[in-house]
Every structure is written in C-alpha cells, then in structure tokens.
Image 1 (cartoon, rainbow, N blue to C red):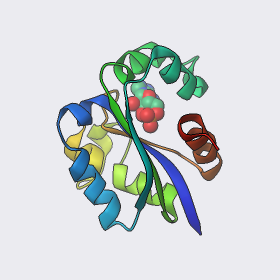
Image 2: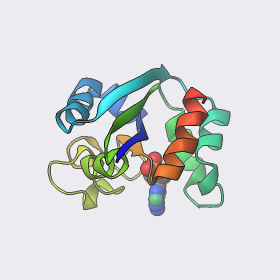
Image 3: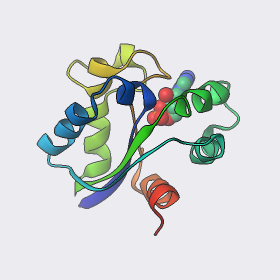
Length: 134
Ligand code: CMP
C-alpha cells in the first residue's frame, strides 16, 4: 500500500552536510519527499516527540542531542514507505547496521545515529501530525 512515514535527519548528519546524499537514497528507493522543514528543535519539541521514551535511561541524552543543532524533518511517501525507510536507515545502533545503510555510512553512535524513521503506520500518523499538522 502507499504509505507515508516521518523521517528526521538528525543534527549530526545535518552538520556533516549529507542532507542531499540521504535525500538521494530516499529518492532512489522510490520514496517521494512530500513535505519538509528544517528546524532547530526546542527542548519541548524534542521531549514531546520522544514522549514514549520518557522513562528510558537514555531520554535526557537523546533530548540534549536532538536540540544540539538544526534537524531536517520530512514526510516520505511511497509503496511500503514505513518499512522501506527503516531498511534504508539500518539498525538503531550503527555498529549493528547493515553495510550500505544510512546509519552504517553516516552515523557515529546510538545517539548520533543520523536519522529517525517512524516504526509503524500508526506511529507515522502521530509523528507527521506532530510536526506538520493534519
Ligand atoms: P530514534 O529512532 O530516533 O528513536 C529513539 C532514539 O533514542 C534512537 O533513535 C536512538 O538515537 C536513541 N537511543 C539511545 N540509546 C538507545 C537505546 N538503548 N535503545 C534505543 N534507542 C536509543
């Protein structure tokens, strides 16, 4: 089915100047960028976005990292977009990410892991609404 998913290029990858290289991977996989905004997240933005992780030990480090510089936020649309984007990203921990994935090629650590992508269609709807409204 044609789906939409939320993607964030995190501060590490924006600082490395690889937005275009990551966009090319989306496009070459048949995912269309149908909305985008560059944004400096506030702590409130980041805490709200990651509210599901609030009780996790890594929450503060995650929020600190996500506000450390601008992020590029986009909605990707295409056949099977949620899973396709997750395959392009690779595992959360770049040490475990398959060769040729975005995280294997551009990420440095589990926090500075280059990209975020929604993990399910329902989560994607919530995450897209969070940054782009209805
Ligand atoms: P992301 O897909 O953006 O969702 C939550 C983020 O928390 C994740 O990517 C990682 O960057 C970060 N994180 C840090 N430590 C962990 C961990 N132990 N498990 C999962 N995510 C973690």
